[in-house]
Length: 211
Figure 1 (cartoon, helix red, strand yellow):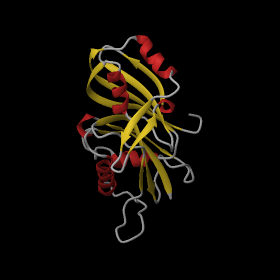
Figure 2: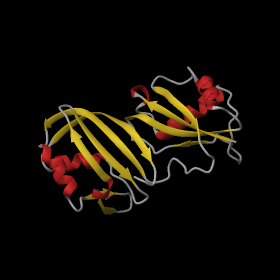
Figure 3: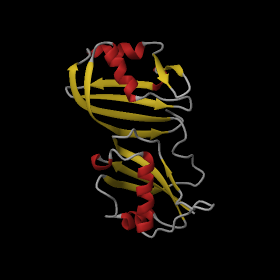
């Protein structure tokens, strides 16, 4: 069995597809390309495709990743077989072979660099970001179907910066949780800053215990 990792872009034309929809697209691609996929067992065998951490619906991703498990295939052959089969917005950057025993893409921790494009009605001063990161804790309220809980956002925020029409946020996710972009925007609003969001893109996705 060969495990091949795809580095790909989820662009604007397919930004509003869900994580499951994207898996379905990749499943159709491998069937259309006639790849020697490894399939799951059971009554309804499915191609063994391991997706990376999901994007919010509506968000784009420049360096998303997924693993394909095949009977036998080289990275160069896979790139050639998939060429021209994807829908607009799905661009495969590269393919590399990785060891079967390497951790799954959903293993923790992982770091995300988010680029939010939009318009500032009122932008924060430069030291606002520094002051936020200097806080010992940033409690936020999260609603679930069963209860409301308080969650400390601070351990999951790594950096902030902003420009005339953008906001960039770097976050880290652990098994204990991760920061949500809507919660970060509410932090701004709580201090009377306003940002009208137009688009979201995860510019970089990084894995590893050194994070």
